[in-house]
Length: 245
Image 1 (cartoon, rainbow, N blue to C red):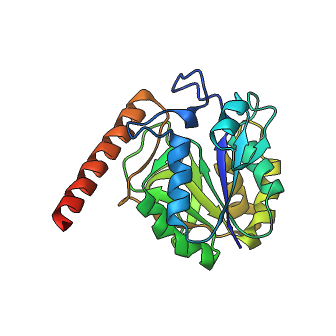
Image 2: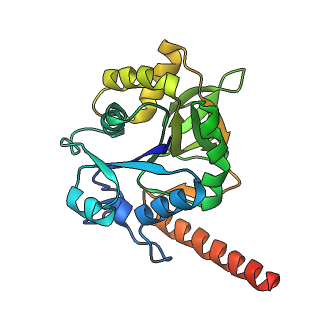
């Protein structure tokens, strides 16, 4: 069975201020953020990948950039947030779990290779790091057993940041869909996870990816930092290749 992947790419991306969808932002590698995501997924996952991209703002540009993907259209992308985009994609998904990510996450292929075995375990999880976080980041806390308890921008005494890569297992998916339906149109999808935990008794693991290059690009400084990571990673890879010769 292929790994089902959803990329949320419907938003206006106003904070970065580009005249096109944020996932199409070019990196110093020459790839767009979306191209890098799709290439890393193909490289890291040994099984086939079924990719559904949720589009909205200037959807034709995304569709032209990823013609081999499936698409879900959020026609009210300018009035809704990620909870409703994810809802559309999950309702269209086939049986089984679904990996999803925000369309502005720049991540290293090694991260996806590390996550791959977890898809077979079919346990819902949220990828996090333990970096200090600011007001705009989605934060998390854990319960006494190490599962996610709170997940939002307003978590008190947060342990770190949710990086925008998540997985819902087959048995949790229907419950998450119901909670996403209950979300306000302006809620982020993290609110649906919180409701599934608090009201449906779901248990979501936190997977610490602090050791991998992974960040969301919301502002110009985020883009600069992502490009710096790519430059450093490329230099390190080149050194390792020269050393191996």
